[in-house]
Image (cartoon, rainbow, N blue to C red; front, side, top):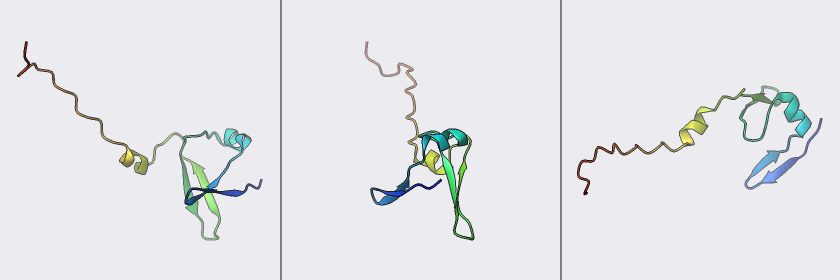
Amino acid sequence: MSVRLCRWGNSVGLRLPKSLLQTAGLAAGGYVSLRVLDNGDIRVRSMNGSVPAEAIAETPAPQAADAGDGWGDQW
């Protein structure tokens, strides 16, 4: 199967046909790992529901909840 590389902002994107995604068990929003092999081929692998460390590092930390002990509250 051949697909065309498309400009996507300052990057280049690859549109994957729905049938290929279904066969591979992938969906929009999922994660894949990419690797360039010694012969120049690009290997794309499903991360099987795993979230890469880079995505976790980009997620903002939740704010601490207010203890709500009432100290200093006015009636």
